[in-house]
Length: 335
Image (cartoon, rainbow, N blue to C red; front, side):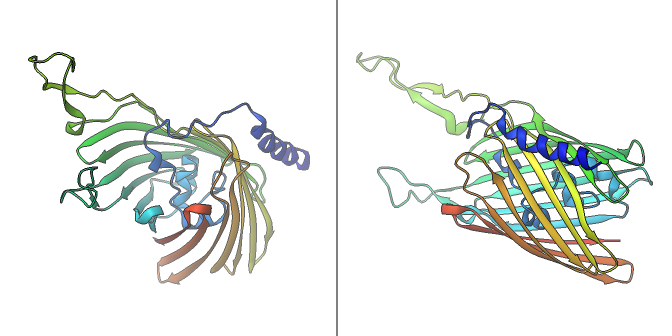
């Protein structure tokens, strides 16, 4: 088993040696890459092999069937440049082997003043950029060690009077290697349709030949934008319990990430929990990614047990280099 674990870790590291190139800004739906979980974000976003966490479904739908009670969580974050990010998810077990999840995420810029060269202080008109995603997922246990799951989702992005929409699919699996809790996970996220922006903002008046006088210099026309796909991610990860007794629980997790619009990277992190109540977490994300602005992550968590109900509170601080810092807060319940 030790040799197998070493082989998996070697594979994660060697994934970085694959030929790749940076294709930033060549996909739509970039908001799909915002990780919603304050807990797992504090662990460097190494969530592919984490089971039993409803927010872990974002990283790997294979985690759906490991959720044995009704769980719901909500995350709010003041994202970069004052943008508001919200994410909500609920998991409902069907039976001992399977379950379903419903999730919603949104990104809103708020009102932005329209400025032009002629009116740099504003035209008096406002616009906004808004992103929305709605998803449903199903997961089941193939054996007592293997979980599989899938999600389908609809997304829509709009800016001023133009919009783009599409459908996407997430697939994932988790394999429990040992009774002690060593888990291997793999997932494919955001495999979906291609589309382009459409709307009345792309309509223009066009002069077909500016050198000829007397022709129609105000022909109705429209810009055609190029089609783009979604930001596909392939993840493979490992969760390794380090300490587990009646009071103390320490886990380590590592993910290798292969995106279609950037270079490969590694996420790693750890979590220490005392008496299943209080947790501290730390991690580092996008290690070895070219020109990465992110890095250190820190966080904490608290579980409050009530009669028939558990309340969760998680907090995460993430360093975004020259872009500043981002804070996430997640609230949830389980019963």
